[in-house]
Image (cartoon, rainbow, N blue to C red; front, side, top):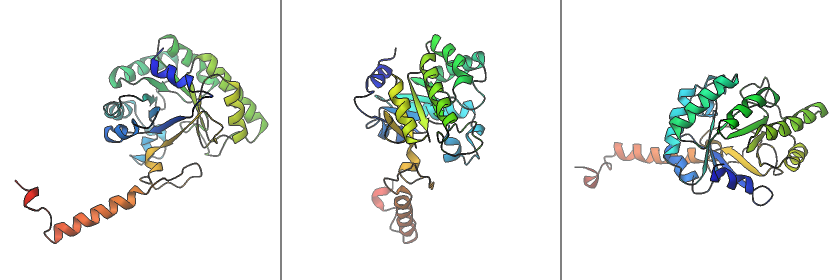
Length: 257
């Protein structure tokens, strides 16, 4: 098993796992200094391309962004989302996952779902492709974006699927927008790390989209904490640039050839 993946697994119950999503080399380079995991998420569909859902993201788009991110990563574990309709069966999943790993040099791929894709996950793992799971709110298939685990049948289903994914061979799993006590129960009942997003600090680690965290993406959802407002800083810089161009203060002689 990949040494980086082993180090992630060993963090369970010892130290929190820090994860963020990135879509380009320059930002990945910054994240690499502070994160254990950098995910090239299919959330880039809405964040960068203004798609209505992640379903519109293509495999080629994921690969190109992942190639850029790879250039910025030296120490972190790099995981790439397998986009919608690229792992409908084991044969398709294996072909596309191999392509992603070959072209991007990533460490692992992430698939959304539980029982329906457990056999597919087993096939990938059997073929030495590390897989991160994803349960709770599943953006690729969700009909509504409400948190999961309020009802007993939902809690039982998600817990059962978490154990199923562990048995299938995933090395960790994202728990998205699930009720806090359910996140705690799952984390206690499986031996692999859980990475939460809107799933409380009961998980072994956390993940957010970098653009949300820094205020670049003007999103306003409960589980996002904005640690800075980069849009404001960029606006100020561009305003100063515009003023200097108009007043002929830029470019100066030192900026010219």
